Length: 85
Image (cartoon, rainbow, N blue to C red; front, side):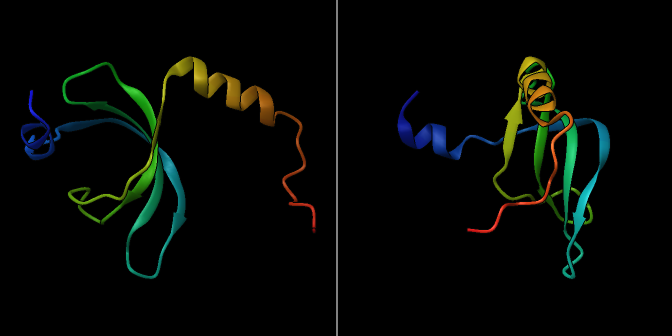
């Protein structure tokens, strides 16, 4: 597939499960943790910002289940205060 064709390809997604809202913004957008199947592929964990209708989104991060488990293990028992510089 040529680069231009790839850039113009429509991205499809299906939100399989809305796990929860991480943050709400004054604009009505929300940062969410969802399980999403992108382009008909296997579902993955996904963190990104969405408009109210889930039609528009920002760039985000997708994680395979083993990556999400690794993050949860890394954060287990952690104090979430960020140290001052």
